[in-house]
Amino acid sequence: MAWHELLRASAARVPDKPALIFRDRPWSYRELLEQGERVALGLHRLGVQPGDRLILGLRNRPEYVLGLYAASRIGAIAVPMNASYKAEEARDHLDHSGARVAALEAESWERIRPIRHELGALEQVVVVGEAADALPWETLLASGEPLPSPPRDPAEEIFAILYSSGTTGRPKGVMLTHQNLVASHYQYLAAGKVRGDDVSLIFVPACHVYGLNLVGGALTAGATQLLLERYRLETCLELVQRCRVTLFYATTAVLIELGQFPRLRDYDLSSVRYINSGGAPLPPEVAARVEKLLGIRVANGYGMTEAPISGFRVPGEERRIVDPETGRPLPPFEPGEILIRGSHVMKGYWRNPEETARVLRDGWLWTGDIGYLDEAGRLRVVSRRKELIKYKGFAVSPLELEG
Image (cartoon, rainbow, N blue to C red; front, side, top):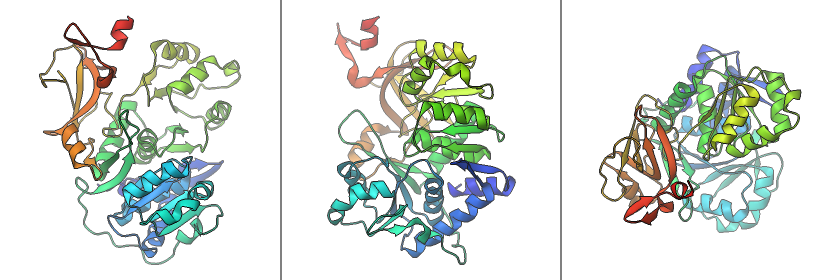
């Protein structure tokens, strides 16, 4: 299944249900699909072809979702980019991806415009808002016959390149196929027990794999998602109360702030049934404090751009703990490098075959993370492999030394 077919399926099933709510305006599944088709046609008329890279430097807003749909519909490759990037940061994405077209926030384009002459591949810029030397987003809302639907190979066709924020060197372009992301979305639904009647609040940046999985997962389930451009705790709590949010997705920093917020009792958060933290390790004491305050269990997900959902036991995923030097499988409770295999694991790194060959071996992704499995197969992440310290011939995590 190609990524855009997820939205099509939900639009056929629940056409009048709100798919998105943005700035208090609901977008039904039918409207989102119709707009997505128009944007796909508009991009096609701009010259975007299958395999072309399309930069999406947009915040959490409907245009970002429409850009994803349109890229998938055309057969182009979406390249999400942080809308807050400075010119030099954006240059890395634009140059390395070789994108011909970019859809940007007007403020982002104003930062990038001075170096446009240095971006040889970039031909067209579309902005949400008003800016010089760029086309307005409304240009893409074309009318006409829908694009044809050629045969696709979701297992091989790249849908997105996401630049990882790894711990080593410059970010690498992670190639995710349609199958990779569709599988991740279904794994996310299974892990979080997401239902069609859920309402999720998405303020984590959808340009990163965590946020992208939340957006795609909600569309897959036929659920409703509230998109928030910028995080502010009071705004989030007001939306939870007013819109009866059921799924609250956060980061460790957000949960620390939530647990220390003095006016938390002023808000009715009784609709929330699930809280998930991702993007960084969650200290047990932080989770415990939030759980005590709200009476809701806090789940901590583990994943990475290369394998978006990897911490929960979900269908279609295999995990293995091995000695990082020899590759020997290790028994329960013995820390070693975490290996992941499944349909959600990336195709490889864009224009980097050497690094691809290093981390992908016999279908297994060598994550560079250290962890162990307990007797029930639950994963506990300990540290990064590069953080290990050699002590009396053993690889020891700094966390173990601290203990």
